[in-house]
Length: 169
Image (cartoon, rainbow, N blue to C red; front, side, top):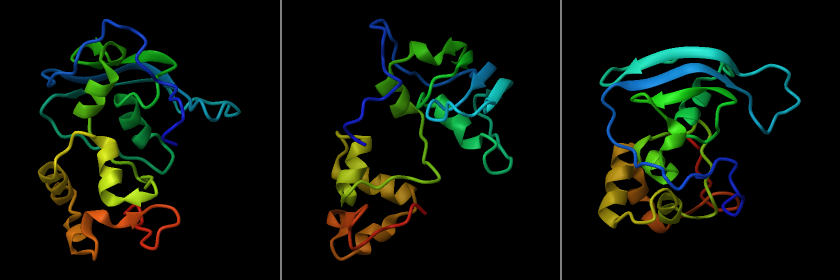
């Protein structure tokens, strides 16, 4: 997984760093279909439009498979839209440097993937420059302080094949 080449990459050298939002997020005529499922004949989204104003709370609800998580993944450019555009403060997401964007837009998947290694190594994949204090704060904010009560704490092995195979929850 770590060695695979992502479909979404920075292709322009004139990209800007993400800054705090002032206006908000807008989906404008967004069309999307998962690239890993080309056999699907319908798009997940077909010309979806909505705006979320900065500083507001928004709930995205719907049945399983309706695209709730996909909306957040598109905001993080885990995928690119097939049509339309996703705008942050009126600027197309493709104008932002990916590293800067992903450091600014938080997302925890419903089904996170734990890579075989320690809890600390897994966390450092998200931010290789994180200090011990950063890691402790992140775990506390995620309500995962139980990690410090494990026999080996941050050095506990997790992921496929480990003795402590933590669930995504």
